[in-house]
Length: 185
Image (tube, rainbow, N blue to C red; front, side, top):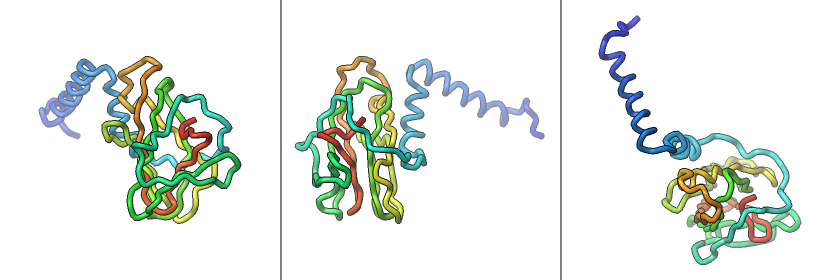
Protein backbone atom coordinates (compact mmCIF):
# COMPACT_ATOMS: atom_id res chain seq x y z
CA UNK A 1 0.00 0.00 0.00
CA UNK A 2 1.29 3.46 -0.87
CA UNK A 3 2.18 5.93 1.81
CA UNK A 4 -0.74 8.41 1.91
CA UNK A 5 1.52 11.16 3.21
CA UNK A 6 3.66 10.98 0.09
CA UNK A 7 3.28 13.96 -2.29
CA UNK A 8 2.95 11.47 -5.17
CA UNK A 9 -0.36 10.38 -3.68
CA UNK A 10 -1.97 13.52 -2.28
CA UNK A 11 -0.65 16.13 -4.74
CA UNK A 12 -2.59 14.84 -7.82
CA UNK A 13 -5.74 14.51 -5.72
CA UNK A 14 -5.30 18.04 -4.37
CA UNK A 15 -4.76 19.42 -7.88
CA UNK A 16 -7.89 17.66 -9.11
CA UNK A 17 -9.97 19.07 -6.24
CA UNK A 18 -8.51 22.54 -6.87
CA UNK A 19 -9.37 22.34 -10.59
CA UNK A 20 -12.97 21.34 -9.86
CA UNK A 21 -13.30 24.09 -7.22
CA UNK A 22 -11.86 26.68 -9.62
CA UNK A 23 -14.20 25.52 -12.37
CA UNK A 24 -17.21 25.77 -10.06
CA UNK A 25 -16.18 29.22 -8.92
CA UNK A 26 -15.51 30.61 -12.38
CA UNK A 27 -18.26 28.86 -14.27
CA UNK A 28 -21.58 28.10 -12.60
CA UNK A 29 -22.52 25.44 -15.17
CA UNK A 30 -19.20 23.61 -14.84
CA UNK A 31 -20.69 20.11 -14.56
CA UNK A 32 -23.10 20.80 -17.41
CA UNK A 33 -20.17 21.93 -19.57
CA UNK A 34 -18.28 18.75 -18.74
CA UNK A 35 -21.35 16.63 -19.51
CA UNK A 36 -22.03 18.43 -22.80
CA UNK A 37 -18.40 18.21 -23.97
CA UNK A 38 -17.38 14.82 -22.63
CA UNK A 39 -20.53 12.70 -22.30
CA UNK A 40 -23.35 13.75 -24.64
CA UNK A 41 -21.47 13.50 -27.97
CA UNK A 42 -20.11 10.07 -27.11
CA UNK A 43 -23.06 8.41 -25.41
CA UNK A 44 -23.50 4.92 -26.71
CA UNK A 45 -27.23 4.86 -26.14
CA UNK A 46 -28.88 3.03 -29.00
CA UNK A 47 -31.93 4.39 -30.71
CA UNK A 48 -34.86 3.89 -28.32
CA UNK A 49 -37.70 1.88 -29.76
CA UNK A 50 -40.97 3.72 -29.89
CA UNK A 51 -43.57 5.24 -32.11
CA UNK A 52 -43.45 8.34 -34.21
CA UNK A 53 -45.08 11.20 -32.34
CA UNK A 54 -48.14 12.87 -33.82
CA UNK A 55 -47.21 16.51 -33.18
CA UNK A 56 -44.58 18.87 -31.81
CA UNK A 57 -45.03 21.93 -29.62
CA UNK A 58 -41.43 23.09 -30.00
CA UNK A 59 -41.16 26.31 -32.03
CA UNK A 60 -38.76 25.48 -34.87
CA UNK A 61 -38.09 26.20 -38.51
CA UNK A 62 -36.05 24.23 -41.01
CA UNK A 63 -33.68 26.75 -42.57
CA UNK A 64 -33.47 25.50 -46.15
CA UNK A 65 -31.19 28.43 -47.06
CA UNK A 66 -28.58 27.28 -44.52
CA UNK A 67 -29.03 23.60 -45.39
CA UNK A 68 -27.02 21.93 -48.12
CA UNK A 69 -27.12 18.69 -50.10
CA UNK A 70 -30.47 17.59 -48.60
CA UNK A 71 -33.51 16.07 -50.27
CA UNK A 72 -37.01 15.94 -48.84
CA UNK A 73 -39.10 12.88 -49.78
CA UNK A 74 -42.22 11.15 -48.48
CA UNK A 75 -41.55 8.65 -45.73
CA UNK A 76 -42.91 5.15 -45.23
CA UNK A 77 -45.22 6.37 -42.44
CA UNK A 78 -48.25 8.48 -43.32
CA UNK A 79 -47.70 12.23 -42.85
CA UNK A 80 -43.94 11.86 -42.36
CA UNK A 81 -41.14 13.08 -44.61
CA UNK A 82 -37.57 11.84 -44.87
CA UNK A 83 -34.65 14.23 -45.19
CA UNK A 84 -31.51 12.60 -46.57
CA UNK A 85 -28.34 13.45 -48.55
CA UNK A 86 -28.90 14.32 -52.21
CA UNK A 87 -25.36 13.21 -53.07
CA UNK A 88 -24.40 10.41 -50.65
CA UNK A 89 -20.71 10.94 -51.43
CA UNK A 90 -20.88 14.42 -49.83
CA UNK A 91 -21.97 15.39 -46.31
CA UNK A 92 -25.50 16.74 -46.05
CA UNK A 93 -26.32 19.52 -43.58
CA UNK A 94 -29.84 20.15 -42.28
CA UNK A 95 -30.11 23.47 -40.41
CA UNK A 96 -32.94 23.89 -37.92
CA UNK A 97 -33.68 27.00 -35.86
CA UNK A 98 -35.10 25.85 -32.52
CA UNK A 99 -36.61 27.84 -29.66
CA UNK A 100 -34.96 26.46 -26.56
CA UNK A 101 -37.83 26.50 -24.09
CA UNK A 102 -37.18 23.11 -22.51
CA UNK A 103 -34.27 20.90 -21.51
CA UNK A 104 -34.75 17.96 -23.87
CA UNK A 105 -36.25 17.16 -27.24
CA UNK A 106 -36.86 13.95 -29.16
CA UNK A 107 -35.84 13.47 -32.79
CA UNK A 108 -36.10 10.58 -35.22
CA UNK A 109 -32.95 9.59 -37.12
CA UNK A 110 -32.91 6.44 -39.22
CA UNK A 111 -30.04 4.80 -41.05
CA UNK A 112 -28.65 1.65 -42.55
CA UNK A 113 -25.07 0.80 -43.35
CA UNK A 114 -21.82 0.99 -41.47
CA UNK A 115 -20.72 3.92 -43.67
CA UNK A 116 -23.61 6.07 -42.36
CA UNK A 117 -23.36 8.54 -39.53
CA UNK A 118 -25.30 11.50 -38.19
CA UNK A 119 -23.85 14.26 -36.00
CA UNK A 120 -25.80 17.06 -34.32
CA UNK A 121 -23.79 20.29 -33.99
CA UNK A 122 -24.37 23.56 -32.13
CA UNK A 123 -23.86 27.00 -33.68
CA UNK A 124 -20.24 26.83 -32.52
CA UNK A 125 -19.66 23.50 -34.32
CA UNK A 126 -19.62 21.58 -31.05
CA UNK A 127 -21.06 18.04 -31.37
CA UNK A 128 -23.88 17.26 -28.95
CA UNK A 129 -24.97 13.92 -30.39
CA UNK A 130 -23.41 11.34 -32.71
CA UNK A 131 -24.77 8.18 -34.26
CA UNK A 132 -23.10 5.48 -36.34
CA UNK A 133 -24.96 3.17 -38.68
CA UNK A 134 -24.97 -0.59 -38.56
CA UNK A 135 -25.59 -3.26 -41.18
CA UNK A 136 -29.32 -3.34 -40.32
CA UNK A 137 -31.91 -0.60 -40.78
CA UNK A 138 -32.81 1.12 -37.55
CA UNK A 139 -36.54 0.75 -36.91
CA UNK A 140 -39.07 3.35 -38.03
CA UNK A 141 -39.99 5.36 -34.94
CA UNK A 142 -36.67 4.83 -33.20
CA UNK A 143 -35.94 8.01 -31.27
CA UNK A 144 -33.05 9.88 -29.69
CA UNK A 145 -33.09 12.41 -26.88
CA UNK A 146 -31.24 15.67 -27.50
CA UNK A 147 -30.12 17.69 -24.49
CA UNK A 148 -31.09 21.24 -25.50
CA UNK A 149 -29.26 22.69 -22.49
CA UNK A 150 -26.02 21.68 -24.25
CA UNK A 151 -26.64 24.08 -27.10
CA UNK A 152 -25.07 26.90 -25.10
CA UNK A 153 -24.34 25.07 -21.87
CA UNK A 154 -27.62 26.36 -20.44
CA UNK A 155 -26.38 29.93 -20.01
CA UNK A 156 -29.68 31.50 -21.10
CA UNK A 157 -32.81 30.68 -19.13
CA UNK A 158 -35.56 32.50 -20.99
CA UNK A 159 -37.86 31.01 -23.61
CA UNK A 160 -37.24 33.36 -26.52
CA UNK A 161 -33.75 32.07 -27.35
CA UNK A 162 -33.49 30.64 -30.86
CA UNK A 163 -30.60 28.29 -31.50
CA UNK A 164 -29.33 27.00 -34.83
CA UNK A 165 -28.83 23.24 -34.80
CA UNK A 166 -27.04 21.63 -37.70
CA UNK A 167 -27.54 17.95 -38.39
CA UNK A 168 -24.77 16.47 -40.55
CA UNK A 169 -25.63 13.27 -42.39
CA UNK A 170 -23.12 11.01 -44.11
CA UNK A 171 -23.95 8.04 -46.31
CA UNK A 172 -26.68 7.01 -48.72
CA UNK A 173 -29.11 5.76 -46.08
CA UNK A 174 -28.67 8.40 -43.37
CA UNK A 175 -32.06 10.01 -42.69
CA UNK A 176 -33.80 12.45 -40.39
CA UNK A 177 -37.58 12.14 -40.24
CA UNK A 178 -39.82 15.19 -40.05
CA UNK A 179 -43.52 15.92 -39.83
CA UNK A 180 -45.11 19.14 -41.03
CA UNK A 181 -41.71 20.86 -41.11
CA UNK A 182 -40.79 19.75 -37.57
CA UNK A 183 -37.71 17.74 -36.69
CA UNK A 184 -37.72 18.01 -32.88
CA UNK A 185 -40.61 16.85 -30.69
